[in-house]
Image 1 (cartoon, helix red, strand yellow):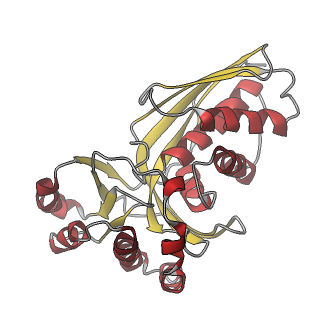
Image 2 (cartoon, one colour; image 1 turned 60 degrees about the vertical axis):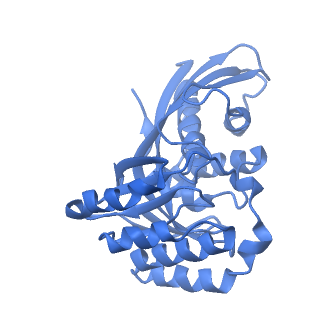
Length: 290
């Protein structure tokens, strides 16, 4: 049995934010988080390091490992040393927690020499994220898009994938990342619940295949409710983006852009400062690294 494991999981951006009504949708992108796990003979002692952002809390690492060890009934046998490395900015709405949880679950499975079905893997990460307090709904939409790639349309309350769409066109995805972080768990849920009916309508729109307009409208109404500037979304559309909107509870904004319009959208966003990240739609499944 191996006592160490490595795995990778991918980022995602919001199509429909589930916080208002429990129904969500998310789109996988090629940003990634890698996790490495070494099991130890010190049960109850789980040490985590986030190499790409050392100041961040490691509580999600600890909760995720604990959930996996408990699932296999070996929490009294092993502790763990865990390191993660990611190019997903933390606390910007880009599903860094979902990607980390998925990668850690897979890495612990690898270290244990165990297997689990896909939905068990995703749900272990969602359970850990809820217990760690880094999510409001459990972010099942984000976790499933991170794990499976493509577009997942979900019922977060029931933890069901209603539709999984593998995207034939791997369009570029441009992400505007402001300097300031915004932690999902600290968001104003009551304000977001005011738009529950509108978000349900957008969820139906996405389910029927109009996911780009749904993504844009979701981003605009959540931006208004949470107090973000919607001009950046309008600028992206004017420059040729297929869709643009606030990702999660922000502050990052994501735009799905035809290749030939990429430079125009970049140009329209440079005036806002912050950082621009260029990636693409991801259809690759999260996996163990051999």
